[in-house]
Amino acid sequence: MFALPRFLRRRKRLLGSLRGLHYRVWQTTGVSGITRLAPELRDLANIVNNSPRSALAVRGGGPRILFVSFRAWNTHAIVDALVGHALRARGADVHFFTCGGPLPVCDIAAHTTAPPMPCNTCAPFMTTLLSTLRLPYFKTRDLLDAAPPPPDLDLAELTRPSLQWFLLSGNPPPDAETEAMRKKFLISGALVARAMQQLLERVRPDKLVLLNGIFFAERIAIELARRAGIPFVTHEGGFAPDTYVFARNDFAPHYPLGEAWTEAARTPLTPAQDAMLDEYLGARFGRGNDVGRYYPTIESDCAAILRQLSLDPSKPIVTLFTNVDWDTATFAARSAFDNMEQWLAHTIAHFAARPERQLVIRVHPAEVRLPLLEPRDRAADIIRRHFAALPPNVRVIAPDSPVSSYTLMDLSAFGLVYTSTTGMEMALRGKPVVAAGRGYYAGKGFTFDAGSAAEYDALLDGAPAMTVERVELARRYAFLFFFRHHIKFPLTTTRGDRVYFNFDRLAALEPGRDEFLDLICDGILHDRPFLAEPPA
Image (cartoon, helix red, strand yellow):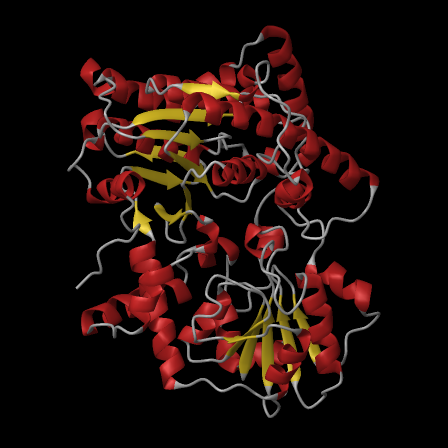
């Protein structure tokens, strides 16, 4: 949420202690000076001061839009606020619902640094952000006095993703901490449900706009909106920097493309589009995007990798790419297996009985490269639970290893994924991919998708082969996904933990000033597709 000195990131106990002290001061005095000093809030205040008063005027006449902007993840909160102001400038009646704190627990921070929750920085950041733009907002606790009893919701299921994320485990152990956090999330969920039901009756919104849609507050809001027949839009940060994806009546992190993919699947790319995709993939396969963040150094030499892993190049090599199991992308991905642990253990056992093949397990670098988000259950822990010793034809590459995943793809006969984006990347390199989970690119025709463990084994034994047609489908999907589904947001730039504004007056948010902001607002207001125009 806010930039922290690196030494604090590496000292979790110290960070927790400092947060606890700050929290007690905040509770006692009601003062949160640290939040007031957030540079984004100062910059936005300057932008508002440079703009005429009329820029904040309510114009009316349009639909009522309710944003559920619950927590101060600064990038998303600022985008919500700017889009909210832009919708107001286009006549919408805009309201916000934010937490306001404190709840027993929430998902703004993981168990590595909480509790206590950072309510003393989160709540005032959100209220100051919205107040600066004169955007009306409601807080949870302000709606509870007159709120009806909690509606009949399956709160255990609706809060489960947040519990898993908070504990950084896709399959939390049945221990005291898990049970304590489960109860706290149920209480938080009940409070949010009561407040949200009251808010829907009070505001009577025509539409909801929410981040992600999978975390508990948004998931509860969506369930109540569905019952009331209220449509909703979710959004999430994109793969490329300063891009966002949007979904109508669906979850943005599932990247639903619907009819857009039906059309794109049968439309060949133009030579110029092929060249654009090749240039983008060249950067992505090099050190662009997440590669540079996850791999400070990269070993790409085939011979060196074969020697390091003691692999026999005369025997088929199959590479399995793991996910981090707290990633929300894996929570609803059940297909051939219930979770990543089942899939990983089953795959190792499968190859143990087939010594003529070699299995390489590439552990996701996020297990060690994301400060304070290291998973409770690492791939190595999962493997040790099921195997006292690895089969002789199985190799495991540690998450901090510099071995290039892309070189591994090239060395492999085919690849295995649960939901990892490496599945799409491998298909783009002309390699067959067997998908055991229901990832966002599954079912698009270029991966081999298993619906059961038996189907999975059959695909592995059948040595799937890539075709020219499958590679072409992968390229059409990648172009639609990266260049059209991902919408640029040039009004802000995020570097590290800091958001920078690329405009100095609110006039930049008026209709006709930015084509991408117009696209987003038209999608919300008029149900137009959240797709950028295809480059020629």
